[in-house]
Structure formats: C-alpha cells, structure tokens
Image 1 (tube, rainbow over the protein chains, first blue to last red):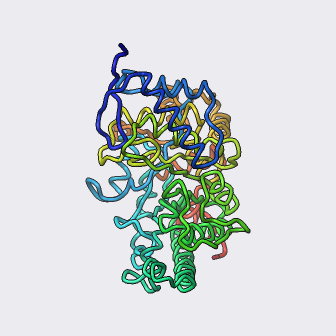
Image 2 (tube, helix red, strand yellow):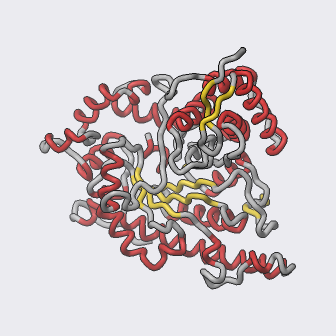
Image 3 (cartoon, chains in turn yellow, orange):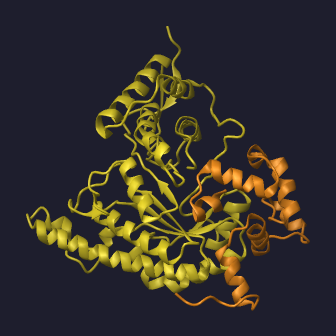
Length: 344
Length: 95
C-alpha cells in the first residue's frame, strides 16, 4: 500500500494523498488547463517534476542555487506595524525585499485622487531612506467609478435590465476617467521620484478596466520612459463586462495570459503579472499544474519580465489568510523550475 | 536585478548578466549572500541587515542609490530629483 503524504488543498487545509493520487491530480490539472485555455499540455518530464515537488515529505522546498529570482510585491508600505515608511524599511532590511511598494490602504485608483499630494510626499521621503527600488501601487478598481461609489451609471445594474448600449457607454466613460486619474497619479509620482507604477489586480472589473489600464500604461511610458509600469492581472481570464473593447485591434474580453501578455507588451509595460485563480476544492498540486500549463506559453514569447502572481488564492497558493509556507514554497519552486519565471 | 526589470523591462537572465558584468561577478554570485555582502560594501550599495547601523562611514539609503546609479549606469529617478533639488544639476524642462 502506498504511503499517504501530507499535502495542501486549495483552501489551505492539510490532506493526505498517495503519490499516485498526486500524479492523478497533476495530470488532471494539466488536462483542465488544456481544455479551458486551449494551451499545449506540459511535457512528461515537467509533469514528473511537479509530482516530485508535491510528493516531497519535506516541509520546505527550494530552487537550486543560482536559480534565484526577483520577488516583486504589492503593499509593503501600508502601516502594518509602524509608519508606512518604517514598514518599507523593515521589509527591506529585515526581509531582504527586492523591491518596495507604497500604496494607499484602500488601494483603489479613484481613492488616491484626493490624497495624491500626501501620497507623493510620503513616497518622496521614503525614497530618501531606502535602497531597494520603490513603486507606487494601486488597483484600477473601475467599479468605484460607478454609482453609488462614483459618478457613472452602474453597468452592473444596466446589464441585467437589458440596457446593453447604456452599460457599454458607462463603462467607457468610467474608463476615460480612470485613464485621466492614472496618468495624473503617474505625473505626481514621477516628480516625487518613483521607480515605477504598479497596476495591480487589473481587469477585476473586466475588459473596460483592462482597457483603461493599457491606455494609461501607454501614455505613462511614453511620457516617462525611465519610470517602469508593472501590470498585474486580477484573474486568468478577462471578463467581458463590455465585450467589444479592443486595444490595438485586439478584443480584450476573453483574453488568456498569452494574449494578455501581447497587449501588455504593446502598451509598453515593463513587467507583466499573470494570474491563475485557485480552485479551493482541489489540491495545490492540481492548482499549480493548471497554473503552470496556462502560463507556460507566455514564457517563450515574453519580451518583458513575467512575474507570476503567487499569493493568497492565486498561482497554486491556498486561498487562506495565512498561506502555509510549505504550499507557498512548492508553488514558487514549480514556477521557477517549470516556467523559468523572471520573478514572482 | 529588480531595478533593471522594473525600469528597463529586462528579463531575468539579461538582468542578472547586466548586473553581474557591472559588478565584476558571475550571475551565480548574485544569489550568494556572503559574496554580495562584500560586493555591496565595496561599491557602497548599503547593507541589507541590521549591522548597517554600526557602519556609519558606509553609504546607505539615498547615498547608496547614488552609487548604484553610477555603477550600474542606470538613472534612478529619486537620485536625479535629489541632484536637481540640491543644485547639483539643473531641472529638466517640465513635461
């Protein structure tokens, strides 16, 4: 009888599977990715390697010496234990962070608008007392531009009422406002000395949000070629809230990571963060296998660094508020070994 | 490497090679804490542990970023701002 190996589920709970069951999960995760995202399967040796990683009894696993990658982040400066500036110093000096991010607690683009000078001053001061590159991060969160939170008609209410053209017009109006806000934010952060802007969880409100972020990225990179733009996604698949929006002739709704990468690169972003969401009812082995398969086509075509999102609820990391280290380490090693990611 | 990735869009292999060449080490060395502590000291890149507070004669923070900018031959925006605002250079035409 095969030994049962402790392994994590997508909700963070600890289960026990045999190596054969882990292999079955990995193979099914790959198959599901192929079916859904229309991507090639992983090679046999890559599947074997994933099985070995997830069948290891070790609490922690790691990459080979020399295979270290860059770790990006969101939200290192958000008043976790001291001031935001001190938080970033701690993150740099105690945790060896590769980069730092100042962000507002709410993290939404629209919210930054009214506190922009204060945010820029904080960034300016923090840059004087840190070494690692520092970005200013927000999530575009286009939903906040819709009533009752914002000025635009709420497309989520218009759509169920069958008012399709009105909903689309409202999406476009909100996107235009978001572009203006994002560029204004970048103008100010550039003057403060930011190394980059981070658009995180892009596309959470579907294709209008992705559209707005790509347009803002293009403008920012043209204005400030020395300042980077990191564009990370909210999900594996761009939802079609509008459905007809295009960027440089490419329809955004329905895009999977490879197509996302293409438009992100065209917009001039310097880093791309693909997301593959976690299925909490499946094992982490299943989820990581699926994530590797969906993102793998990006790796050969990427002209910019690809930082796979591997945090709570995405990239094979359990949807649990304190992601277990064993699961985090296994997903990270998988992405480094199988995908050759540029960072996480 | 993070700086070269986020501001120059360099992929990991390219970023490692670029930085290693500038520092006179190998890409493998970049992940070696022992080697890189010495390299960081040599170039004045700031110390990444608490002992930094007991080396007041070494560059740190914005000073270190001046050194990083020079050695890696890459402009760092806050360093450029520092130069402008302290009269070291003239401010560029506003956008």
